[in-house]
Amino acid sequence: MPTKYFVLDTNVLLHNNEAVTCFADNTVVLPMTVIEELDKFKKNNDELGRNARSAIRHLDRLRAQGSLGKGVTTDDGGTVLITMEKEVDHGTCIDLGIPDNRIIATAFRLLREGKRVIFVSKDINARLKADALGIEVQDFEREKADFDRLYTGWRTITVDGAVIDRLHREKMLELPEESFEPNEFILLRNGANQRQTKIGRATGATRLQSLNPGYESAFNLRPRSMEQRMALELLMEPSVSLVSLTGQAGTGKTLLALAAGLASSLRSGRYERLLVSRPVIPLGRDIGYLPGTKDDKMQFWMQPIFDNLSYLMGLTNGGKQDAATESSIKRLIREDRIELEALTYIRGRSISRQYVIIDEAQNLTPHEVKTIISRAGEGTKMVLTGDPEQIDNPYLDASSNGLSYTVERLKNQEVCGHITLTRSERSRLASLAAEYL
Image (tube, rainbow, N blue to C red; front, side, top):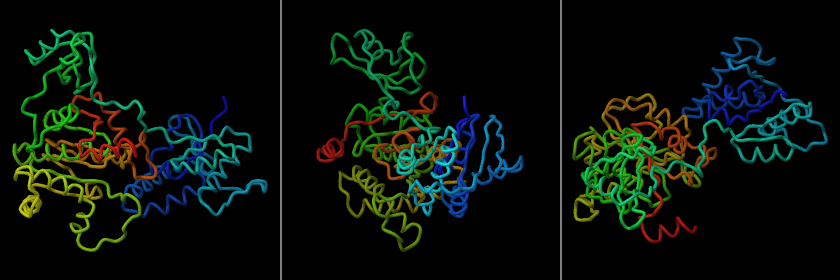
């Protein structure tokens, strides 16, 4: 079978700095334009800059084994090749002043030479242009989950009424014929009486236990749906160190996480503080430079968190969200009981005994989520929330984002749990918007 030539776009290496090692015993081709673009990105102090520098260092290590211009063999038997762009025949109208077009031109030249060429890019437009030239194209599939089949964290099993009664009575139930994921929720339903149900959480491959009655509410917030009750169980349970919550707008992901974080840190004292962070990625056009200190700038990005905190603090004050409520939030931040931080400043930290919420996690790459979770020290709980169908990062989609990837990869780990929330509880109007618009 002929060797495949995978021509990589720059965004593939910026998404995964080890991408050149992900194509087995085939040939990975990096046009010179990719190296030039990596050189531009390497100066950045964000994740793109770090990935660019890491990719360049990896290529430099390969260079020590031979000439990348002639091709260097990798450990898996493949070849990495850096090539100069050459003139495309005059019959093809393509503007080589555009970097993407020069990369595509390299793939086109290799195709004209009779090679089996596959152009790999995270950029849909680049893939469309390559496909128009007859080049086989694909997205970078290394770190993707099947969003249409994404693990939901719960399912329904039909049983006899006696089985439900036993779980209700004994608080524990063995179902030898079943196989559960760790912390998976099971809705037991009586086949003869559909109204008789009972929820259990998997604490073993075939074992269920009743939900903890102490987790019926958090910081005066009570769940409004079965899925929210399941989510609260995970958010409050200290043995579950990583919780992921996905769902459309208004399903209560962030509010539930904040309520559980406040209850677990301020009231029970299980954690020393509540740390909340979110990616600094705007919806729509960026508003540009923000004046003031770091805290002043963060207030704009964290306003959704302030809104939720204000609502929760108001619940302890008869539902009033007044000046006293705002003063309480500022006092907790001043006393370092609540910390609001940009994700930019989390790298390099070791976070111990904290309840950490990463909001809007669908805008993070799998590598960024890995970096964040690896910051967790002893006694820390991590919560990732987000809606994989509302992504503002141009190179991520519902399947390739870090939140979806984490849900699928960690679903069989004993210290991890996940729930997909489907019903909007914010308001009737919000529910209609989420469903019909």
